[in-house]
Image 1 (tube, rainbow, N blue to C red):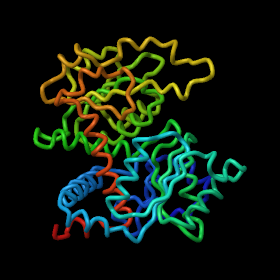
Image 2 (cartoon, rainbow, N blue to C red):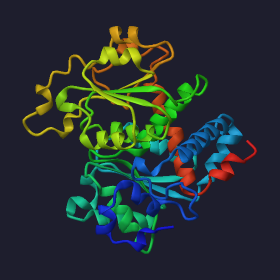
Image 3 (cartoon, one colour):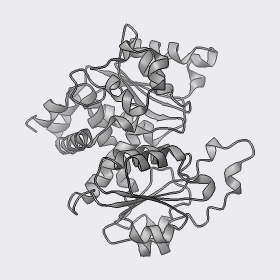
Length: 358
């Protein structure tokens, strides 16, 4: 199996994402990642394995005895949550996942509280954290930083896994995992995810959750994707190119009502105005036709679902919150379980959990 120690950073950085996958897998070549950096690392086989492991963990955790068993699985490991970009859900979800498995955790949630405030490089900060911890879960506004730090650690005297909890505008792989897990669970007794239509609506240009989930959906058969957004915020060209190359049925639209009528899942997103220039570009875009409210709810099929990575503003009316088709709160809980599954698998405990007596 290819290793990150066998390739220079410049050569690794220039590779297409699919070609980076072999460099990031667990030793032994079972397909599970050692570093989790982008959605292209996951195929259908390991997505299904992770979903099954998440189901198993949540079942075991229902009893006191099972929960205590899980708390011993990784009680000998420590995780560093390095979040230099604001977050509450993603941070707490990973924290709770670590706690389920008994991991001791530390955190930095503001670069101003770390030595980077004094001018320390990212590389030195990460190397320092690796001295104390066995895994680094990191979220950063800087594109490509998780990849660079994974390469740095793999070429250090203490290589430890990195989980990308959001990097710049490009990828958010663990969010995509929880989204897939939510879709799989929502349709597991209704014919499965194959053959479904999924609509993405909102800020698709800058929404890294959309980019990652769109790719993961290509692992399933005949899943049609519809992208609904103002022209200024439509799905970027790199996503379109991937879908076209893979022969995926997709549509670019500005009509949320029509898309809702034919969708099995509607994935709403907020306007990502934290990426705006000082001029406040997003405020000039008319988004009034890209909100999910009572009219859209009436058009949604009885077995269809509404999703959102949160936080929400006004793109989903609160009148939808108690409808059984609203899945965004379940998404949050699903995130804790699938992240626990990913962490357990990263450390090689998939088999022992699946085959334990609880």
